[in-house]
Each structure stands twice: as C-alpha cells, then as structure tokens.
Amino acid sequence: MAKEPTRQELERAVQCLQVLRAVQKDARTSGWYRGEVRGKEAIGAATTYLERKGLIQPAVGPQPFRLTKKGKEFIATQIKDWDTFVAKINRQGTLEKFAKALGRVPEGNK
Image (cartoon, rainbow, N blue to C red; front, side, top):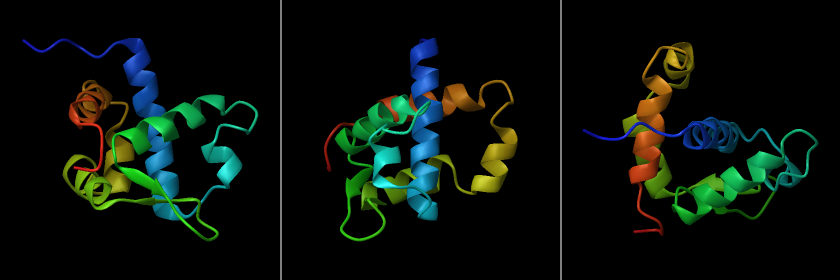
C-alpha cells in the first residue's frame, strides 16, 4: 500500500500546478517564478523543484520558463485538460494522485 502524500507534499503539488499552468499560459514575470512576489514566496521553491525534475527549463525572451518535452508529456498524462482538471481538484484523491505522480518523476532531463 502506497503511503499518502504529506501535507507539505500536497502544498508543493498545488504550487507546482500554479507554476505549470503559468508556464503554459505565458502568464507571469520572472520575479513571480523566483518567489519574489509578496505572498508567493513558495512559488520560487516550486519552480526550482520543477526545474530539478526536468519538467520546465529557463527560456530566453519575455516568458522566463518553458515546458520541456518531459514536462509536456507529464501534463498530457496527468492533467490532460486544465479546465477539467481544475474542476476536479477539490474532489477527494485528485490532488493526492497528482502529488504522487509528481513525486515519482525522476530528477533530471532523462
């Protein structure tokens, strides 16, 4: 039986979801990704975590980050459609399942 994600892992999963969504939408400044916006300090840690996992990488230009191939594949298998996923996020087990999947992603670009 797999262990349930801790509260910290669930919080990190929520922050990682915010970062992944922002990367796809071209929606944030580089300061936001670094956690320099008041109240969003944890976003910096989530950005670093996603970089270590190889799901996002720094980009040149107005968008500070972009999805890697691995990141696109992860979203395609775990999230599929953002609107549907967000609508289900409060259902019991949805966030836990995402947190577990995120935890299983090996670090690095491979």
